[in-house]
Length: 102
Image (tube, rainbow, N blue to C red; front, side, top):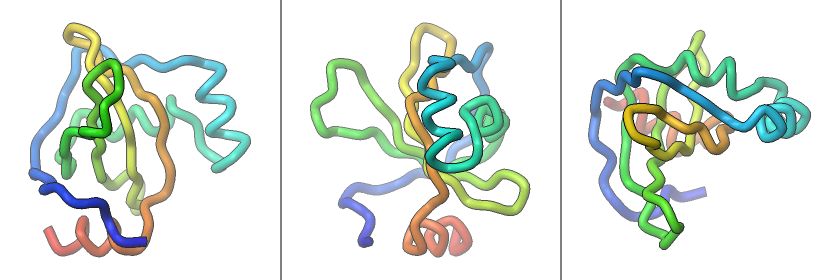
């Protein structure tokens, strides 16, 4: 799958708090074998990030980052100083190459 258009920026992200819906976390675990609590450990850290401009009610951000040797794609929004994780999955090959090329 080809990454959608739009530039990613390499940024360091740290949040005072990372939160998520426990039911969504369980859904991610059942589908992908890891939960959002695990993925929350991608922060603080360097990630490739861009704003998701598809017209959601709240600003969403797409990040690519590495955790324990695997590259993940993570979608989150900000709520004040907190990061609210929405979903995550293992990155597609094109995103893994992009991560490793940076």
